[in-house]
Length: 184
Image 1 (cartoon, helix red, strand yellow):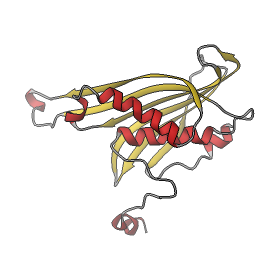
Image 2 (tube, rainbow, N blue to C red):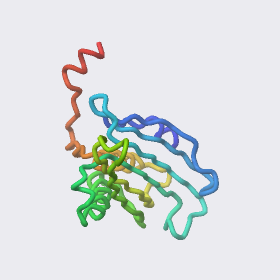
Image 3 (tube, rainbow, N blue to C red):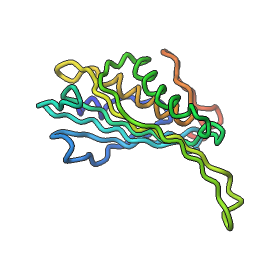
C-alpha cells in the first residue's frame, strides 16, 4: 500500500513530498506534505497522514485512518460569512463522495481566519484563510486497495480550500501556453 501511495498520480499543480510520519499514534504511518501552486503562485498547503493499526481502534471503527489538513487563502468576505465553516466541511464530504471513496467515522473542524495589519504593516492587504482539519476511516479491501480515491479526495479538498474547482472526470487541467513555452 505504501508503494501505491508513493506512486500515486496527483493532480497537476499539486506538489507532494513524503515527510516524517507521527510515531506514537499508530504502529504504521506514512505522511505527505502538499503544496498547491498555480502559475507560479502558491495557493495553499496541506498534509496527509495514513495511519494503520492491525488491531483496529474503536474510535476509528477500523484499522486504517486518514488524517488530512488543508489550508488556503480565501476572500475576506468568505471567511466572515457565518456559513463558511459548514461550506468547508461540505467540501470534504463532497470530495469523498465524488471520488467514490467509501468511509466511516468522519470528524474534524474548519477554521476561518481574517487578519488586518496596523502601524508599520498597515499597507498590507487584509488576509483571510480557510483551514480544514479532518480525519476519516477509509473502507478498503483487505490488501489496502481503494486508497487512491481517498488521495484524490484529499487533493480536491485542498484545491477547494484554495478556490480551485474540482476537475470533472476525464478533464485534465492544461498548463497555460505561455508557461509551456517557458518550460521548453
